Image (cartoon, rainbow, N blue to C red; front, side, top):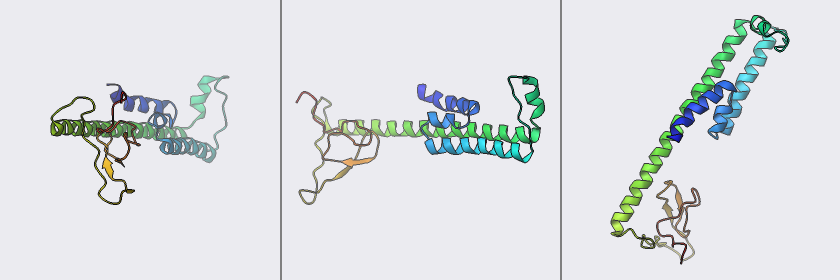
Length: 170
């Protein structure tokens, strides 16, 4: 449930401050790009239309009257596009995470059924390297689906223990 709210939170934060929604999704480059696009576009439009600066603390009503719609509309559109992008990126992240979790669960079930027993320490043995003794074999991590070294007891990508890892109480 919590991961389902991340895209919505990212979109709301992107509306508040351009790029902040992408930062919550840990998309650093995208956050910087959207922030520079919205802020840079706003500065360019203010310079192009020669809008005089207004102190919003002195007279809040003067702000809406001082900013022409030719400047405000593109800034609002860019901010909304940033929020939509943050939402879509967040949804894609959630879908990818669910796909990886489903694949890991299927791999766990397949490993457990191939073993015939599911107790600790009775998992599959690590694949043996089929070459020189110094050569290691790459296997796929059942948790994240990435290739990892079979000589390790954990995946160096997601740090989850591999099925053939020995329990802590050796």
